[in-house]
Image (tube, rainbow, N blue to C red):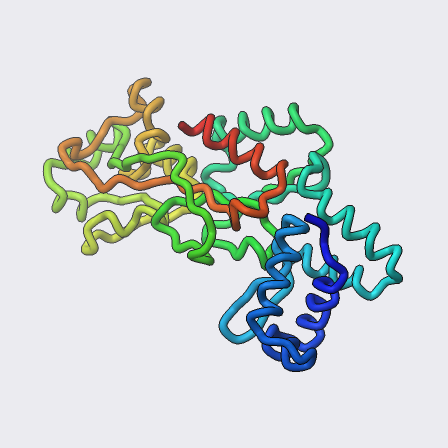
Length: 286
């Protein structure tokens, strides 16, 4: 399907009049027809141009690019539209990832980046530390990885669970020998508890949290050093337990299962380079 110049005109009218209804009124058309034509334009280009809200519309990065093109002579418009639709298949350009700091330094995430960069060397990757949900469309991110307890910025985004995990309490043998064993949850009130923002709500509300950090490796290293009892995902503390640096505290308690979630805007308009990275995430984590 080719992009229609009439549809591009209606798109530019929608931007200029700051809304679909206003553009329809100015051009003597029904709102539903303008809305349908805009959808057809997005389908023809294979990319989302507008962020529709109940009160107004906003432009995606591709929408801004097309609006700038629409101000140019016809030849340049056609050339630019061809390039815009071709971008979806290109394995080059920039790809942006939002991910919590605790995951940035994991060997698994590093392996994913290494494999992707080796396979597609023309793609430039930007990785930013974000602990909360980001608006992928407005902030021009391609994907985000977050624990499932964090609210996603837009419920329409695709949310795919790539890893389930549970947390547990751990401490060094030296710490427990110095400050006393823990035989019940009430005993935790006498100890320094270390956790992060994602897991703190799973613990009893009466506990006084001595340290809350977004970096799980800080919590792990402090627990090994005997600073306190850390509440960590089992996957993070597994090696230290096997080596005897840490032991499990209150092993009989099973805390609720959590999930690591891969988030992306839409499965309909995903560029090929993003789809390929998502495939690697799913393969490696599962």
